[in-house]
Image (cartoon, rainbow, N blue to C red; front, side, top):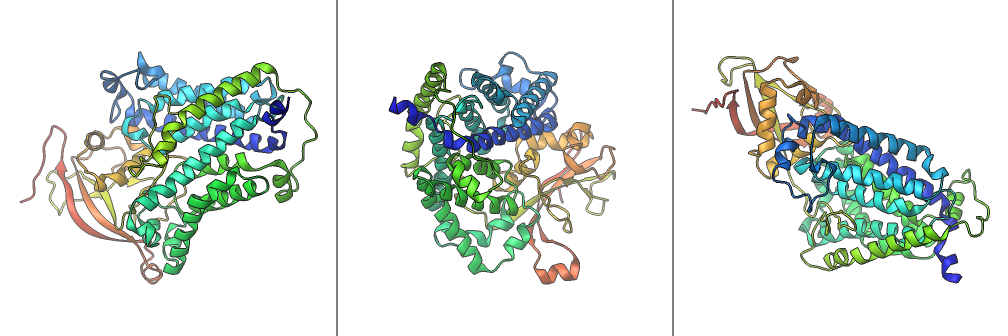
Length: 486
């Protein structure tokens, strides 16, 4: 039948390999991040303990394996299981069997990670969490090496790329004026949540180049996504532009696995002949075996296609709405979501600096020492590190504090953990200035940070220049003692 032959897409074998292994690799990173950080942030004795959260939890609204019981041991079991399955998929082992084997593997990753996200509270409130879940569910239906890639699933993955890119572009056009007057990147490289090692150099580029960056961004997000549905080789060219722009974002910042996921998903539009033309060492597969897709697999993928098409109604309506939502899910399974980021750009970088002292009295003359974070700026001389696709959740939330309020429950819990010298919490930091001893007092100050000019860097060796702003939280000690300034 003609429609059955159209359903098969044998010319996208390389794309399937990239999609399955790439998404699995990002699941591996996500589970590793949770294994290392979740117990300290959200565990039984974490900053926002999951057992307390589950007391008022609606399982119908947020499905999770932790619905009945949470323990740090169970969380580690979930993460280790996710790591093992992800590693097998990256190695391509489940793909060697019937198509239902990688299907079950990816659906297991989806359910395991959704269980973590749905109790992760503010520490898991990022758009790339739902992006990973949606991508994992969708690539589950790409089949195995024994079948041909299903065209409808590839189209749905292209549709995911479209929503990711076009949604982000529309958020910017509808957002701050700086995106429309092309000045957004005068600031963004400097004020983004977690700069990378090249962010300062990107910020110091001439302003005309920054305006070209914004124009290029608008072209890549508002025009190019339409062409990923075009015939080949135009679709592959559109995917190539998306990949190139995402690589620039990878080089200039740390946005967890957001950019890496966009790169992986863009391969849904790259055909084997184009991939071979660009990378001649890639083999071109011969003609696929006729009738290699069993009827049951055709039925499964068509049901999945119809489900995702029906769920697309709400994201389409959101894209066309003047009140467009950013990073929102319209169902409790977090499928076919809407995406977007940085509708407005912060013009100034305010950093929250946490200090402690061993002195009896918390006067300004006391020996105050700063706690050093792994990713967020602090030390003026330190070159920002490249962390993405790994996600430093504490560091990211620290960026939001001056934009919202420092008086958040998790932040006061964090300060208490510092006063207790809690080892799990201290392991989230780059350095403890007290080598494991509990300080008597902690306080929180705010500073205005900016990148040093090239002349300033040559003179001082410092990559950042900072100016004190105000005391955000006066000195605190265990037992609720609080020293107020006179």
